Image (tube, rainbow, N blue to C red; front, side, top):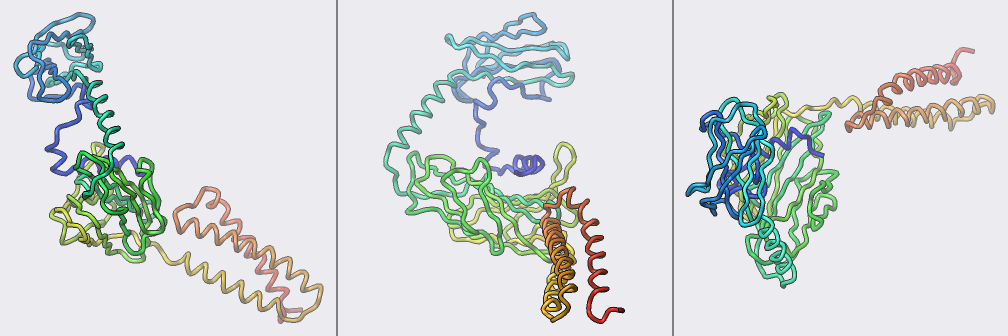
Length: 399
């Protein structure tokens, strides 16, 4: 799962196109939105039908505040205004639009500035129409067409335990009203070296991952098909160059990561690279760039990577060499009693070496557990004792 900090990055990296689009009325219905431009102690309640802009004029609105009610009527903009409300008071706005009762969430009057509330009538009708349209579209034969990777698509990096994990949050957008057949599945090959790729929770079941290839089967429904996956990119130096080819147009490039010391992104295709901070002060690196045409490739360099030590790898090689040497030694002729004793020591040693190798591997891949941390010194101590006994009993040792 992606960390909550990166969820913040996804939100703050919203492209310009998303800023232009009107918000979903069902999301903001009944919510109190801070409005610093309003006089302190003021609430405006806007009543609309089905969508923002469809103002309900002349509608009576009731505001219940600390058990008392106030009433006001909406103006040409569909707004009813309440002034002089005491800071800290609890309130709720209500309206009855042609028999449909609308109610806001609980409201607390702020000590500075005012609040704007929107009440939306007809949301149930909108949902019913949308469901009917989706059913009709699903029943209708698909049409030939194209899809794009929408502007909300982005690439997110994480570096847990000095590993690089990459997450693709892709939105395949079909702007047609009907399902679209693009002539086959949408296939995206991940950058060279990508390992352990797998879909994330929330990804469309149309998307499957095999090795380093993403296959999204069609046809594609009208709107957005979400594809989310994660993979690991091994690296052995402080910088790495990634290349990602896109088979369909990408409307906007957005790349981000929680900032670690020295980390930076660079690409000729980035128009801006900078730092942003979450509400709790967590720093992020964010890069943006214009869209990429179908068949185009995003080339970017990631620098300032946390390079891991090669000691565990060399330790594993040394252990393998030691096993080979002792295997050859065992093949030499010797006394039966000594051979049996050595066999027991070797069996125990091999078991400990295998256990140690597993601990080292889990440490190298960031999967080390507290049990591993406690067990490793004991394994090394027992191995040291066994090697001492083997040295004493080996040919050429003092009689």
